[in-house]
Length: 96
Image (cartoon, rainbow, N blue to C red; front, side, top):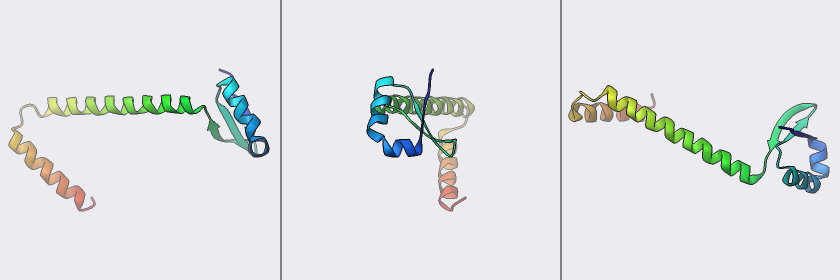
């Protein structure tokens, strides 16, 4: 994948043409300052796609964690689990 590079000065001076270039190429645009990468510009549609993927990954990770906890605690009575959860909530509320 070809990645475009623009200096922060050029970005400030030519924001309209830079945005047009970004839209036309659909490729990420690296913004550099003092020859160091400082930011990446992407199309908003790409940002939404990536953001959705991140949420799906987090959801999957949570589902895997819940399944792991369910299997680990399958022989623990619900009453005991409820008590442990209440204790954990109180512990967390105290700022630990």
